[in-house]
Length: 178
Image (tube, rainbow, N blue to C red; front, side, top):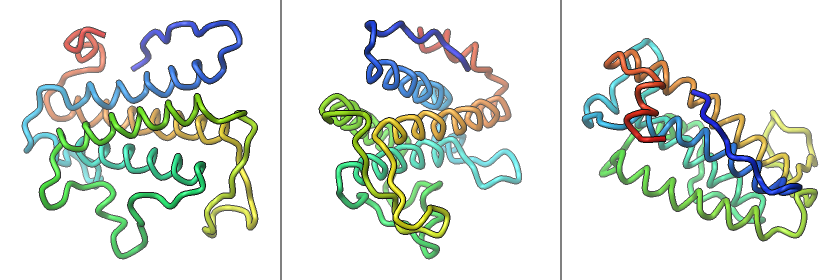
């Protein structure tokens, strides 16, 4: 759901990008408000997506991209053997633990975006078949990519939540008070 994104200071591109990313994070966070664990992990359609899995996925994805931008390896390595765990809670993971992790990741994203000398600074894309060999992207690109990724999954979260209990994004914004 679209909420109002406060105007940034004139010329504060970093602030604008981070505000739009935070807006989309909020859509996913609100989608899990008031749910039981069973509701959060349920898959109300033929899709493998659950709200708990979406929270985990977007947090892990954001952490991975910011790590790459810093020249570090992502905290979690995904490959065909464990890819499905990216969208499901495993072991002792809970929605609450994933939300707390995502909050930490979001703070790291903001700190990185505000500290990098220029949004034009680049870093190499991962060596994956869907990326061009030797490709590089800018910090600006990664922030825009995270906005797009998070927004796409916020839309999924809206549909899943409404399928679970009929609550719409409008009701959830009112429930969250924002």
